[in-house]
Amino acid sequence: MKSVLTSLALALSLATAPAYAADKLLLKTPIAFATALPGLGSPIPRVAEQLDLMSGGTIKMKVYEPNKLVPPFEILDSVSTGKINSGYTTAGYWAGKIPAAPLFSAVPFGPEAGEYMAWLYYGNGLSLYQEMYDQAGFNVKVIPCAIIAPETSGWFASEITSEEDLKGLKMRFFGLGGKVMQKLGVATSLLPGGEIFPALEKGAIDATEFSMPAIDAKLGFHKLVKYNYFPGWHQQATVFELLINKDVWNEASDQHKAIIENACKASMADSFAEGEAIQHAALIDNVENNGVTIKKWSPEMLETFQSTWEEVAAEEAGNDEFFAKVLTDMKEFRDGYELWKQNAFLPR
Picture 1 (tube, rainbow, N blue to C red):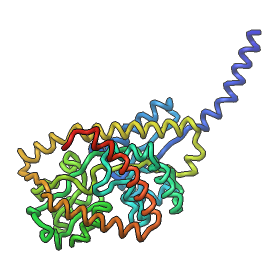
Picture 2 (spheres, one colour):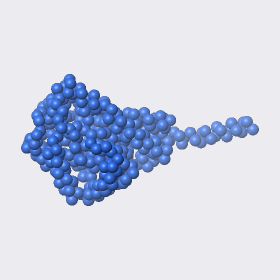
Picture 3 (cartoon, helix red, strand yellow):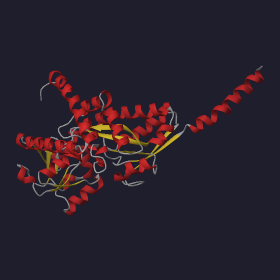
């Protein structure tokens, strides 16, 4: 009897071994932001670690720093074609390919992190996010995988006191906020993080925005431009995405899919907490040690930015049906959320 049981156990182990071996998944993941940038690139190595732990080693993620495997602006195409099987980036980088993409990254005067996540997970945000890539013909599965709190509004060489002061500036600017700045007479360009400091230093641009103070500090903008403006009206929250080739995703087990989705959902909370924890130290350091002057936009300037954004939003919606669909859905969700926000939160 013992020999029969031993033989049966051996047969079962041999039968199941190939299934376990075939179920291993290696995600080769180039990223758009250096892992040294806290809250921006730092979440993805932690995701990689958690995927390994939660899967018992059957999911491995190899993270490649920007430009080590593919350039940041080529990640979407590379994942879609299968050149790489995954990538970590932000949808706002695809505005030239998909007009609605920036709505899944950061929206001027748009939702803060909590509201953004509410729309994504419990509104129609996630289904619209995937629909966007599907209808544009990209063979990718999209998973929100990090989110950060408000960014600074920009770094300038001199004070900006009126709309006139913006005219003629050359400025690195991201997403839909860039279209607002263009309407106000700013010549904008979208540069990856590693290219911004050299562009400022050489005079190719006069001003820049990039991210939160602790992240901007890593890039050294304070060495060249000393006026740092708030609030970040253009990016009250920014979402980052894990893209996985859809053929690879469809072949993954349900268990692996659940592990990846939940690791990214945990990363949304973790990245937000990390970002919120470290900004005050960067602000203090900028003022006390780096000679930075922190400025707040006047009510008049904020009104200028908001009214210009409303013009941009109407134009973009008029030019692209899917942009209009997403914007309308987000607005309907936000209208409902506003009732809660007005009653539940302390006035600011």
